Image 1 (cartoon, one colour):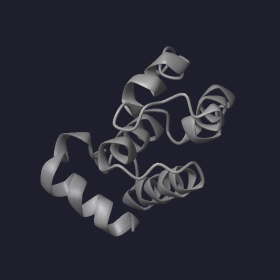
Image 2 (image 1 turned 180 degrees about the vertical axis):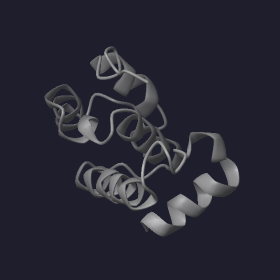
Image 3 (image 1 turned 90 degrees about the vertical axis):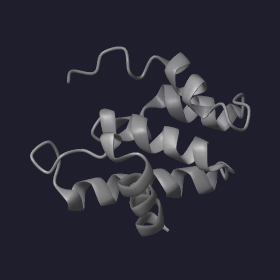
Length: 99
């Protein structure tokens, strides 16, 4: 599944794919795989929600996937399907990213 989503990013959302000098492709693949795994555990099945999770995970070098605020939000299932990006922003996980 990570490969399919990575291909989707490459084709549709190439500006969101980290450049090789920002992040090794293998590291990015790992982040995508971990995002999808976390998404599966929390019933995230809409493409835009998976994309949002991958995006935030990538911007935080994977840290968002283990961030308590994100995990609490996912556990509480307070996000609406299709609205993951907003729910992630509201956790504050991106407030202190340095890029």
